[in-house]
Length: 323
Picture 1 (cartoon, rainbow, N blue to C red):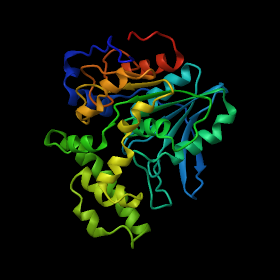
Picture 2: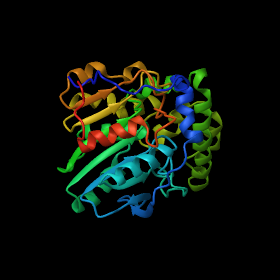
Picture 3: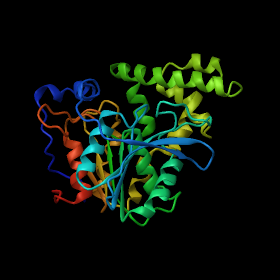
Picture 4: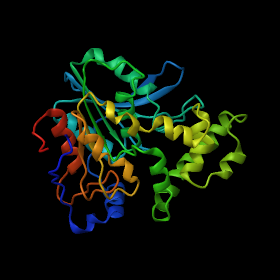
């Protein structure tokens, strides 16, 4: 029954506001710039992704996946990459298609269930290591939970741990949550960059990406209806949510997996707090603090935030979690 009852994230009073806890790291968290080395990775379908790497000849590899419209430069990716690097791990911080500062070649970009590139990266690099772990944040968390549990790919025998933070396991419910008036600032921010990308896609593929459809998009669900779904082989938003949500696969967890979702995360539906599934699982370790926001878990006094230290503890087995 791996629901972890003892949760030791106790934020200062200000960070008990879920929006402040979410926004503060994005706006103000600085100080760590990993010594990334960029590598262009050509994918099997003729496209590319950019990988930012920290290779120090370790025998263990951590592969990190960012959230919606993030990148390897997102603060949670930088800090987690550096922390793992300091503790014996080589690191690959993936940039999903279109997220490295250069538009990808194909009409398809990335989405919560697009795991082909992740599988190719693991398959390419696993031969150089004795152990591989995955860490994903928000959309990237859903991606790695789906990848390791949906049965579509044969997993590497050296893939030993999975850690996912602030995961919209229930994509449909989370789409509704983020469109709520109280989350408008996030909705607007995501749509700004997504629609800018669609303008570029229109220039690349004018017969497929229509300006008239771009003008119809007012919410993230609209974006999924007109673009994420159809451009990636789904009929629309609902089929995309139905087929790609990781919630339906969490009963299949076989690799030890840490899921950290805050109860006050403004992006998440109640269904994204899978207490019952974790209670029935031997391998899904679920940490659900009362506070934390969305990939927040902020702190005034510590260089590394609570969730980053929990990821390190989990993958290095430095502590015994209290269950």
